Amino acid sequence: MKRGINIAILGRGTVAQGVIKLLKRNRRLIEKKVGATLSLARVLARGTRKQKDIQLPARLLTDVPDEILSNPDIDIIVELIGGYEPARSYILKAMEAGKDIVTANKALLAVHGEEIFARAQKHGIDIGFEASVGGGIPIIRTLKEGLAGDRNRALYAILNGTCNYILTTMEESGEDFHKALASAQQLGYAEADPSFDINGIDAAHKLAILVLLAFGTRVRLKDIYTEGIRHISRMDITYARELGYKIKLLAIARHDNGKIEARVHPALVPLHHPLASVRGPYNAVFIDGEALGSTMYLGQGAGMMPTATAVLADIIEIARNRLHGKSLRIPPLGYPIDSLGRLPVRSIDDLKSDYYLRFMVLDRPGVLAQIAGILGSSGISIASVIQKEDRDGNTVPVVMHTNAAREKDLKQALARINRLKVVKAKSVYIRVVDFATP
Ligand code: HSE
Image (cartoon, rainbow, N blue to C red):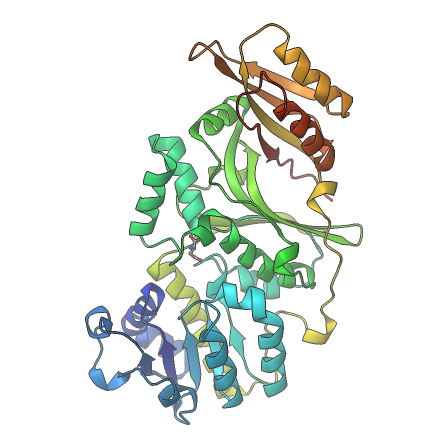
């Protein structure tokens, strides 16, 4: 065997523990594939629980970052701390010392990716980030290599395991939002701050990364329209089902007429579409390619061991590059940094979509006509209506499915409808996705 590769891990959380376990469990297999020994040299583990969480010899553990970042014996640094700082500074420092990087940090790459990827290119550093999107689904490699020859037209994805778990549990077990969130947290799917999950921010971070790879263009996080699932009620899940749809938190990116659409929001997905059958903490990425047509990639999007497999795949690729020379390596984003574009991002107000609408109204003659009148005067046509009988003596839900309408027109109409005396709660609107080719 040739010389060995030394790895250091920054962090002691769930994914770090998974990587340590998997490295141990599959050591011989991995070494056979790489053709060299792969050793875990150090783990940066701060805090008092470090000994208990990670079953490792004490000599491997340190709480001094510099014992790792500039240690000449270490080849690959695996950043699993999460968050912006100190993760960013540690990565930049390690790159300067010539270390290759593996990271699962989607928030960091979505916000500081430009700086990090440029620095990696400058120093000739490998940077692997398969674990940052889709947990165990090898979607980064798929976009970078498998789909390299095609022109992607659209991408629709379920990128947050916590939200998909919550929506599935609400639908199938009838649990309320808070109970479903608590069990997602217990199962280790949620971020340290679960508002990143349920407000759609985690999915937006991941979408920003996928857009780079799928369309070769940068999008700023603030340009990604982002809406979470807090306002989704079981009532809406039930009505959506009646209309032939499931509600999913989707991350959508489309390349259309020289512009990019990039948005994260709950959406009605037709029951027959493969994304509708993605349950629990699973993630899925559905890609529409010009030559290939549609493909979908499905797998566990969160959790210790699925995410660890993605980290290990990066470690293996980088170890091979180190051992056999880096000259043939694929650029981390599939494109040289300088060739990435910055296409304009379409405003959500310009979106044309069908909508699911729910109004809570007094059960009186003429109410439906008032609502339909306002929608009609804004050029919004109604495809179907559901109105159940009076439930509590006063208010009833009226559910509508509209034909394609412009979002700006819809919002204006809803603002007028919400001012009607007969409307007793803020009206709900959820976009219906038709998966049409851009
Ligand atoms: N909190 C994330 C999720 C974990 O729920 O999908 C993986 O990024």
